[in-house]
Length: 142
Image 1 (tube, rainbow, N blue to C red):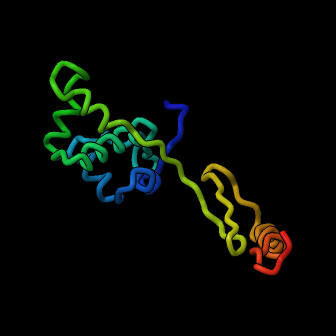
Image 2 (image 1 turned 90 degrees about the vertical axis):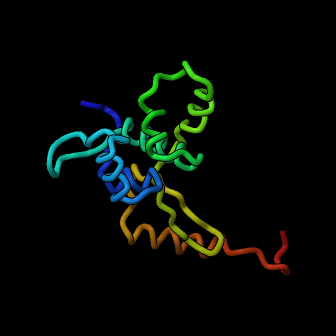
Image 3 (image 1 turned 45 degrees about the vertical axis):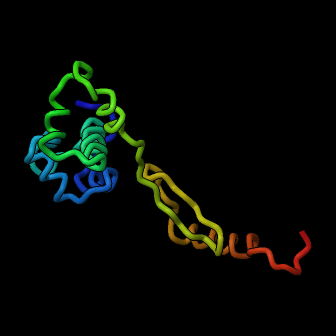
C-alpha cells in the first residue's frame, strides 16, 4: 500500500486539468493504470497523477493517443527524439488550493490539506481585513 496521497477520481481529474470522464477513458485506453482498491474504496495515487500529467503534456504537444501509447511503452532513450518526448512529458507540480476573498484586494490561499476554521472565525478574519486593510485612497498619508 502506498504511503503517499490518495485521490478520488474527481480530485485526480481536477489536479490533471481534465474531466472525470477523461480519466475513465484514459484507464479504458490503457493510458492510465486502473485505480487502486475495489468498488467505492477505489482511489488513485501520485503515480496516476504523474502519468495523467505526462499524457496531457504529450497531448498538448500535438501527439495522438496512439503515439502517446507508444511513447509510454518505449524505454527512455534508444531512439531519436526521446529527449524531446521526456521534456514534453515532464510532470507539472499541481496541488489543490482554496482561494478565499476576505476583502477588496485581500485573498487567503489555503492548501487543500489544511482544514479551514469555522465560518464564524472566517467572518471575523474577513471583518478584521475589511477594517484594517482597506485600499489606499489618494488623500491618505502614506
